[in-house]
Image 1: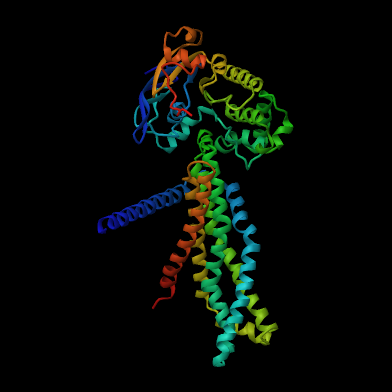
Image 2 (image 1 turned 90 degrees about the vertical axis):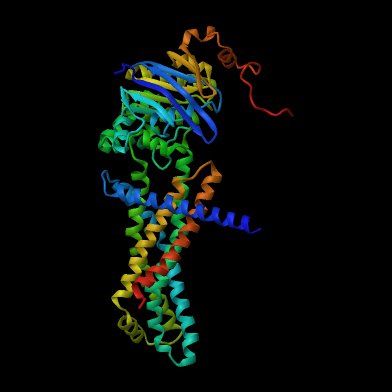
Length: 259
Length: 257
């Protein structure tokens, strides 16, 4: 019984290492090619719109309700210790450091990561990627590099907007439901907020943007078969991006705030 | 130095234990049109992909204009691909781009042509395959199968390549549209003076577009010769294939009901 279990564990470890190696090699190739011309600016603009502009409604809604719930839940807890005045601080710090980047990234992973994997995967199984090669166009540069750069550039902007909308959600609940003074709420928010809170969130967002695009592109680019292969690539892109976002979030938090 | 446009020597390719190509040798002269016939799964598409560098052969030599291409890096591959045009079996049109943008893709992205002149080139090439300029504004999903093949052909010839590959150009088309595509292929190859390699199992197409035919069976090129000689090849495999007979040396692996 012990041997088969070890065999299974060994196979799983090897498969994990193989996948990690393949993704790492894919990422290195993308980074290497991103500094070499030609640069497909039109593709990059299209991806920035796709990732950023078209994700705004989803991310905005997520942020405003997160901010509102955060204010309500904080009130429920803090009222027991007569610490209601800390609510603006808790809302702004939680949003800028953690919830803004993580929730925005998870929403974008679901929306954009899946779309990237599906689009590139369909191009793979319908030979469109081979067609790019026959047209003297490096498919890696044309498809992967613009998406990676767009992810890195756009996610921080999206997260900044999410931070503002989230704080606004907390403000609305604080002022109109919990009877805070609006000026005092805003002053508390601004006074307590530090540059590092926002900066760490934006760095996280850039890393998450890279991971979302990397997973979407990798799973799409390496998809095989027909519709089933594309479906699997889409699922894998979202699941792996979400897991990596949560994992990297811990290590980035530790790098920024651990004592 | 060989005078062949394309020369293959001892090309092999296997996927696991399945040997798809087992030592392919052939030469294609400049301006010649070679058609490779063979059943489904005989390795025809793999052969084309190896020549194009979309797949690396396990061993052997592939020379284009006397230049060994098997170990090319990305830059050399991109340079040599400038000589090629390819018509894919399913068209492989970029579905996010309009028809004219598909045709103008090579001139714009690879040759650095401005969109205005490239659009003119695209409309001219669409005209060469019998499509009006209004088709250029449509997306590929709005076209019939035959029109998609024509657009794919226009894209393949847009950069006036020296070598054109046709992967099953008539598959999925009705006989009349298939003949239209065959005529267009003959005209385009002749107008460009290009070298062509086509793979097909449509014998009517093979006879029409080829100067020479080679038959791929079990990973080997078992016969090759001029089109006019295929009916007296003296090869039982070739005879069975060109007459489409179930009985003969080629046995399909089918389970009896």
